[in-house]
Image (cartoon, rainbow, N blue to C red; front, side, top):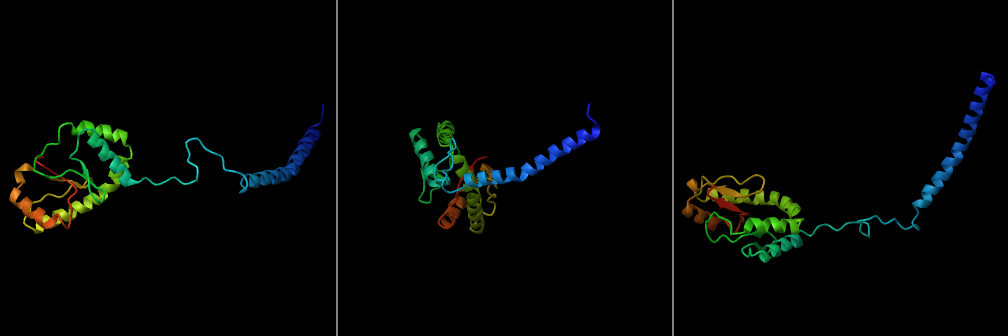
Amino acid sequence: MRSSSAAIRERSVRGLRGLRALPAAAATAAVLALAGCSAAAPAPEVAGGERGGQSKPQDDNAVRRAWVDCMHKQGQTSVEQDKDGNIGFPAASTDTGLPSGYDAASRLCDEKVPGIHQVQQADNAKYVEMARKWVECARKNGYADMPDPDPKEGVVVIPRAVFDAAKWDAAARACDAQFPLPGYRIGE
């Protein structure tokens, strides 16, 4: 049986050998790491990744156009995209209802054009600001009790009890050209 001092010495020597090998191992690892990062070695391809390094930003107008096209294919031809890329419906009347089949078509097109949700979220801040300007203009032009727009979507919801067609028409004539109203609903 060995003495305890011999066992301690053996462990210490093994430890020293390990310590002497550490700088050599570290140097070898550093050389290998630098070689792996050199420009001559091609970058590994990752499943699902695109070549070229940077992903392309989403083309919001193309996404909007695809959604409008989908809605048209579903028979919702009143959905339009204006010259600025905004999606809307022509306001031919103050009718409160959506066209027949609109909800089903919208759900289907939302699934077929998944990027539309990101576009809508980005657009909402712009729409809220546009609607605020329109409402301010409408109030200055005779529609004093015009409600504030929805703070999340920018849609002006006018209760049927306070809707006044004459005031609406006057406000629209005065404000539409300067401040396009992103959306409104009457009767809620």
